[in-house]
Length: 122
Image 1 (cartoon, rainbow, N blue to C red):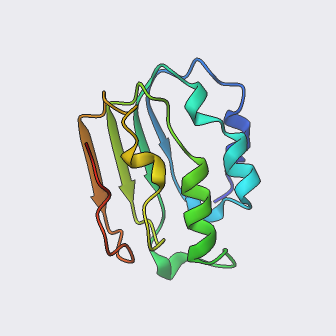
Image 2: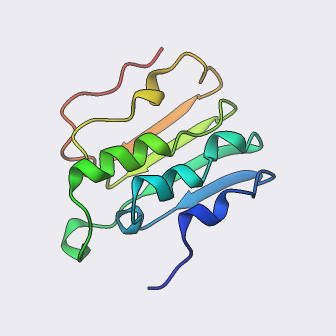
């Protein structure tokens, strides 16, 4: 399926409520992920980060790239609900444990099969 470039979110700072980013294995570069500037979207309260099943992956970067991509998809501190689905990296992003996410009341981690440690949440 053809979709939009994640960097097109850059100037959409008034996004409100739930934002769902799917097929993240297709993000072309770490720079592209950083361009989304999710942390500057204060009205976003729920974020879904979704990767498809590995069988469907074609011509995508390795798991190391996915770790760098998710690191750049840091949400705003106002986020209340986070879902990470099908993530193939071996570690979760460092931002998930930051104390500034004190409004985060729900986290769903599903099919994150390569991650061996849960993030510390406080």
